Image (cartoon, rainbow, N blue to C red; front, side, top):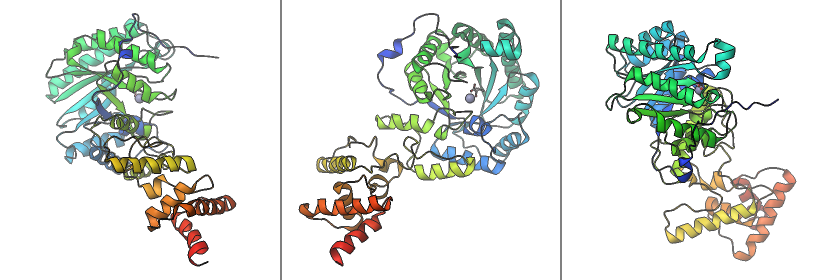
Length: 434
Ligand code: KIV
Ligand code: ZN
């Protein structure tokens, strides 16, 4: 059985192909506390959500979707705590999610009362599958749900005199005919009448990612070109990762004209997760663009994340996993050591060291314990690097190979990685105490 339910835009949209880099970071919106939290085996408690919120603020997020306050008491109370205990910094905007249903929208407005500024994010599902199988409604009826919800947002915002920005998502966007999704979004925008001072957000979620990234980019470009009042609209993307291409969707989507990305730390979220904002931000960083988010203490961020979500960060997680800067193999160790020396000798600013995508120090990692690690695959370069960096022992050229083989052999027989201390003891036993 196969599924091929994505839709190309009705006209060719491939201008994004001509661009080769992202020049400035998008607006980042963390959805950890909503999409991330709703996918956890054990959702976060009130105190855990507060601590996670603080983590996101410390990293530098200026927009944070804090929950679906009409969905559970904890979500509601968390929002009230943030507002009543003045925990929202002046430069941070909270966002709340609501379905386009009257009683849920009303409850959401109660929950958000007193917030200095909030994004009210309303959605309904527009895909062919959801229209036919779940809602049993035709296109006009589904559009009406979106338009009625948008009208109610506008009415309640006026009545409560709050400082709100509106966001609309055609949920299951990738299973929706692109021109129909645009029609729905444009009808919503015509209700909201965004202006330069009060922009609206249109958010395109790959609720279930079901097409290759270039298809998504073409869909985004079609929206960029055809949205009503485009200059007053922030075009946002919300990639999920079902095909494993969330990062590519986001990057090509930005090239195609998107302004904003919703995602999570380490890609937590429904099923295979939301797009990983850390990877996106560090990809920009590695190309010389300041992402505006601070991951210089990645280990602490990852420990806090693991403790609060009870999820694990993979040792291969880009930029963050335990092993992502580690070289065990001799040829890699040798190239890294040579690259580092080359760089130091030239006082070079650019980062070109082989096998290392960025300077591990930029995310708080160390060369001696994180990069060069010794096992049976290692070579003389790595062993000598450890002896020199950790113990100040510079061996004469002729000895390097012999010591390298000796250490490697111990690891091979023990079937174990050798710590720097162990490497030193092998050296000590054979050359100092021998
Ligand atoms: O993935 C999704 O479609 C969502 C929406 C509610 C925006 O999370
Ligand atoms: Zn989502």
